[in-house]
Image (tube, rainbow, N blue to C red):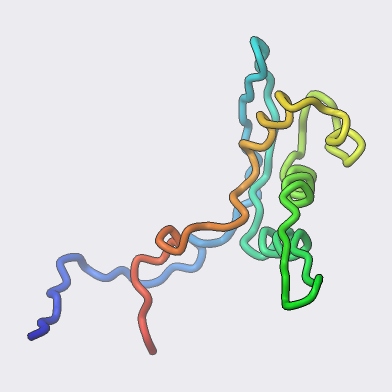
Length: 128
């Protein structure tokens, strides 16, 4: 026998403004070896992140094969989010010239391309 759960919390009206991306620039401090430096980043909107993921996916090779180019996703994400850094504008030329230590530090700024289904952000899916 199945019983309905009693709601223990008061339902709050939906406020879309809570879910809009604000373009507030955030300062992050990164550490490479014994040096620290600041960068300023802006958030990626849900749509922009999806565009970058889609741009990094390649279809083809027969039988519906698909590959994900993580390098392209990371580079394009960094170019989109970094608004101020000690080296100036973040470009492809800059990104292909840095070593692994700086690259790994910058990679920590990039949003995950794919989230686990359990962490999708929705506590409950409602059927309409």
